[in-house]
Each structure stands twice: as C-alpha cells, then as structure tokens.
Amino acid sequence: MPELPEVEYTARQLRASVVGATIREAQVFWDRTIGHPALPDFLAEIAGLQIEGIRRRGKFLLVDLSGDQLLSVHRRMTGNFLLLPPGWQLDTSLRELDPSAWATKGPTYHYAPAAGMTLTHEMKYCRVSFVLEDGRCLLFTDPRKFGRVELWSRSQEQLALRGLGPEPLEDDFTRDYFAAVLSGRRSVIKQVLLDQMVVAGIGNIYADEALYYAHIHPSRRADSLSAAEVELLHAGVISVLASGIEHGGTSFNDYRDLWGEAGDNYNHVHVYQQEGKPCPRCGTVIERMVIAQRSAHFCPQCQQAPTLPGETVAAEASEASEALT
Ligand SMILES: [Zn+2]
Image (cartoon, helix red, strand yellow):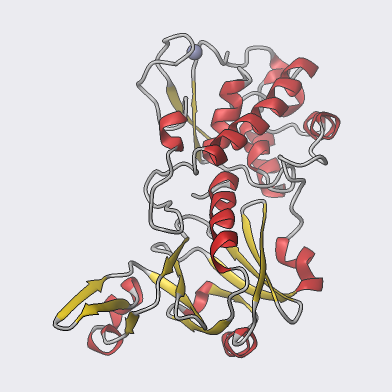
C-alpha cells in the first residue's frame, strides 16, 4: 500500500509534469472508483479544468484545479498513476467482446510509431484516464479497485480529507503533541501509529520501521512509553519517512512511480517483510507477528517484548479501541 513517501514522490513527479495542463475530459472505466460527486456530475465538472497545482496530505494526493475545484485521490492498496505520452490510442473493444474480462482489466492502448508497426500496451487495470489537451493521458490504474478519486470544491477540503491528523514532516507534528496523544491511548503502539487522525500518512511499512528505529516492541501499550521512548519514536517517524522519500518510495508488489519504475527504498528497509533475516543492528533473526489483524515485523532483541502489566494491552481493551479508531 502506498504510504506518505510513495504519495509524496508521485506528487513531486506530477508537479514537474502536468501543472499548467488542461484536462480535456475524464474517461471512467470502473464507475465505483469515483467517490464524489455522482459520475455524470464528475464527468461534466472536470472537463476543461486546468491543473494549477499538486499537493499531498497524508496519503491523499490533491490536485488543485481551476474554478476552485479540488481532485483528491486515495490510492489505498494498489492505486498508481501512469503518464502516457501523446499518440497512444484508447481501445475499449474488450468491453463488448468480453464484459467480465473488461471489468477486471479495463482498456488497452495502442501506439503506431511508424507505418506498419503497432505497439499494443495492456495498460494494466486502468480505471480512470484524464485526457489532457496536449494529447497526454494521465492514467489511474488500480488492480484491486479500492482506490478512490473524488472531485470537491476547494472550500470542502476538510471534508475530503476526513479529519486527518498533523503532517509528520511539518512543524505541527511536535514532540509535545505526540507525547500528549500517546499518553491518552491504551491500545498497542503499532495500531496507534496507523491511525490517520493521530499522524497522517503512516502505514504498515513505515510504522514497523519507525518502531525498529526507536527500539520499541510493536505490541507495547502506547501510554506505557517513557518520555525518552516517545522522543526516539518521534525522531524515528520523521527519519524513516524522509528516507523513504529520498529513495523514491518502497516497492513491493504494486507501487510504481509515474513512469512505471519501481522505487528503491526496499533496499533500505530494516525489518518490514524481513522475517527470518538477521537484524542489521544485532544479528538476531527478525520475527513477524499479527497485531490488530496487521502483520508487524520486529527484532526480538532490539525491541523487547512488554513484560510489566502496564506495558501490555488486554485483548478486550485492544478490540474496543480498534472500534473507536
Ligand atoms: Zn536487533
């Protein structure tokens, strides 16, 4: 799943490529990808708008459009952007030939660079295409179909973002704020880090990496962390996210950048999906456990399991807090 660094990296690539371009029309190949407004309104309102800017907030990619409109994109599990140069032709013939295959795969695109020569590219799982006036197409691809594209008026931005917490790489994510929030949480720290209202943009990869950085076991109770541990974890969150951006994001199965290239951060993770391998710090074998239905990866030596009663979470308490977050 793309997290803050992957979305930030895409936002930077888009900013350098499509700001100033005008959207001629949007073509939607999977209706439910459009979360707001109703599809006919979405299609009517977006046509002719100019892309004025690209931002990121948490895991949301935000496109500022002319007419005070805002496109918000949440990639969820497998959503990606791909920018197609001019000259590629849309082929929707599968829609009539094999409707069930169409529902899964979406359209193909053809390209004829010279007479008698045609390249066919199965533009995998394209759900929405933004056709630009200059002939390029910005494709939103999403095999699992959980991603959402929404159009809001800019004054409705808070609604579009659904109560996101502070940006971890900006000034309002202070140690005092983080300490105050954690001291009020009885659930496990791994789960609290994933709560987008506590801090925006962290998912499974960077939560595991930040906890490893801070020598904190993922199943510790959030309110049991010492002041020194909170300080280390705060620094860890910032450090692992900044490093993820620097390496172009982490690629596992689906994440690709705007040009279809995989990010490089996989070579820089320490514990995420590294179970069975030696800890880079101490050589102990990295382990994996399931916490709140998500896998957590950690070094059992560097990140000591909770032992004191106040450090662990009773099963019922954990479930209750999950329902709340
Ligand atoms: Zn270790």
